[in-house]
Image (cartoon, rainbow, N blue to C red):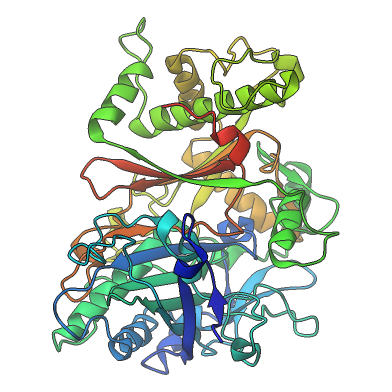
Length: 548
């Protein structure tokens, strides 16, 4: 019996691809003493405490098989992963949360990470032409098994094969020990019928965000290539893995604690009850993705999985439209222009869908009469900024010559905006440059975009007597919120992620149950130089009204 069965859209039952879990391995550091230099206990930093403990970061890389027979063999991948853990030994432990102060630490170092061997009974490409099948010409995430979710490690298994192992993704905590049950890092190698291979990996968001996740895979590929050449798997530059502020996360200073309780920084709140920083709506969503209990499941919304591509010329045209024509000194970045464009596009689609439903008109007509603003939910957006960059807090110490390749732990702060009801800008029909100006001013607001503000937030988290009291003053799950994460500055393709001299034909986050939110867009660097790919999920009814 297969361990995991999933289907790709548009296939008949006879063509449904099946992913079989063949074996699971627990991988430890190649050098058993790699964790000896780590502080004990290994506490996470203040910025790590904002990530939800049940949220993973997922990535899938797909490689079309070359003519060579021995392609990404499991044994070599296992050796590369074991060597990689010499540089990331804390990932072999398990997450724990202190019951009295909420401080997150990693304990049980050396328990290991998971590596799964899997196979798929279908080729990569759905093309019937044997000359193009599996070569990557028409491979899309939406055409992969389970829209990519079957290519990452299994979670919460009920299958007999996995019921006896603790190697799967399981973010729940043991009631007696307070330790998270599942590994922090899980990797799955899936071989397709055509010989192509997908490497899917899942890592806890509590230990890193997108930048650390992508650099981790680049390091794995670097070590793999060196082992393939018969060289020692040594990284030219090691990562910076000690979290910023971890040495200050526990403070005995009562005055400092009282100040943190009384004066949270702008955009944050101090809750009266311990919980996750994103609040109760986040907890409800996470529980609904892993529970069969209908009392904790969210109301069902059919979500469309959409991949969009913007060429360099299309992005250049967007920037022109997003720039104030009456102010020669104004400017917006490509990221801000694309964020403004997609925020407005999704809002317009939502308004048209709601208006047609209210007027009982046939769906799909983009020319329907929109409802008045006071009859609609208030639009908002959420994105984040990376404060580890050398121009910000320089957490990897580039400017100090610390010799680190990158900063691995979490280093992002949220930026959000809810459009006031009395705002003069109507998101539905405003010119793009006005929306982009609103986005630009929010992201670069001096109160929240400065290094001083970033330090204030980290100091505030350090000062709280219980870290679980921290709340972000924004409802990420509000109706008609547009959520964005920007990965477009990180290299997904090219030589840095090549294995056995083959570059990935597809790379990006899969569509998973946890990540299927209404209005969630991830910006990715496209294979085409200068282009941006967008992974978008949104209400399927409203998605029919998307234009452009």
